[in-house]
Length: 226
Image (tube, rainbow, N blue to C red):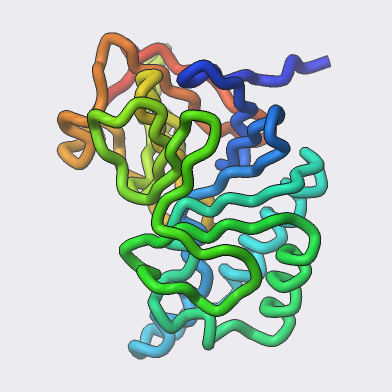
């Protein structure tokens, strides 16, 4: 049997999921970042005819994770929607699925730079949420211990045996943690890029890469740019 991966951060224990979600067993809480619902629909409105299936795919992932871990609470760390008016673009079936999630679990929707205002969906809309000494927010900041954020869509590129592999990842230094983007149509930024400069205490850095069926700890000495 494969051992369940564990991520220890700021005195708490979490399970990093291969979907990019983070499950907090002690509080039965599923944490996700950067869902970017209706991203493709937003592009279509600007004349880029892309198939608008990303919201449905992300909802399928979210429904599966909630059922798998038995979550009773969902915390979305901002940029749940790709635009401030994206909730109005939801297909009826997707809106019904999102409403059903809100009836199944307690939902907290945090403000992001793409969706700074409440979207009129079920649950509680907040700028930040504090719980058990942790602060959940969208924009990562250095200096506040126990912060869990999103926004930067972290990815790790690893070099091993003459080959490289690049995947989204969780990254933390036991004071700040940044979650990978959860949305099906989101990109990712290498954690060695300038976007992450100054955020982490590098000697304490821990990186957990997403795999197909599980997550994997990555030695920082294996990280490469690009």
